Length: 344
Ligand SMILES: [Zn+2]
Ligand SMILES: [Zn+2]
Image (cartoon, rainbow, N blue to C red):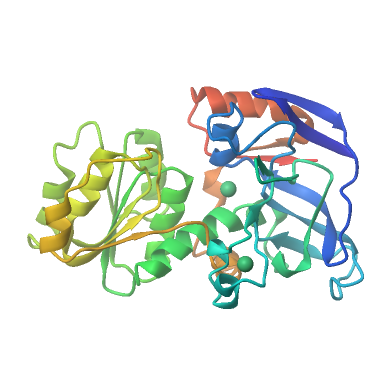
């Protein structure tokens, strides 16, 4: 089969690769489309240590069932599917509790690290355990289904914040996860959702996707003051931090009301400074949110119903053979590209 392989850091080869071996409980999927994730771009130069070459990356994919192993249950060839990129074990106590993102034996498709190498979906075919596979509704395209993973990540964070009707929210960082989080907060019934980012282009997109007001990080003197001015001096109910550095985490904590929720999704920096007393004395609930745990069906529903729109986040849909160029363009970050989808 044809595949795009990271053969050395920052070097790709598009060519023949062996067809993945199909385990007894696995299905073989003919890939129709696969999105390039930020973690792939950050990983391609070795900086994250999670894309040790050689590796076929790619975990945001959709396609059709080609064949199924003897213990994979009943699948129809040609059936349209997507899958959870977290290949959870289904046996540990976290999996038993539905917290599959915390699985003790969690593998991520398209990742190679010292513990494992799991080839992904920048290829004609990919094999995944049947338990992570989900059928796609007829009115959701393969390209839309590539967004199910990041959409589930946003929904998981919003579910953890217990967002609901009548609440106010702030999203700091309008990258793909931030832009989906804005929409997820709106879909949950939040009346006002504000957004902040360095990029004016992304803020324009945030507005198009439902943010009520946006605040350019460069020109907004104090995000906290803007939030207080809009909430009778109280602060917003929920602040979602989708960057992960001291300045933005601090702004999120300062912008919520007493007893409010701050969701930490971004993790750019390993360590940050942290306004401890503000969190303690104002009884702020601070939580980390990683990947998703069962939100895939909800993500598909929201996309199918048009409550979460992903087309405006699609920067390009190109053949897999052009993958190396698109990885480089995303890596160089000179253009305001959001999601690039590759098709084998
Ligand atoms: Zn991803
Ligand atoms: Zn598990």
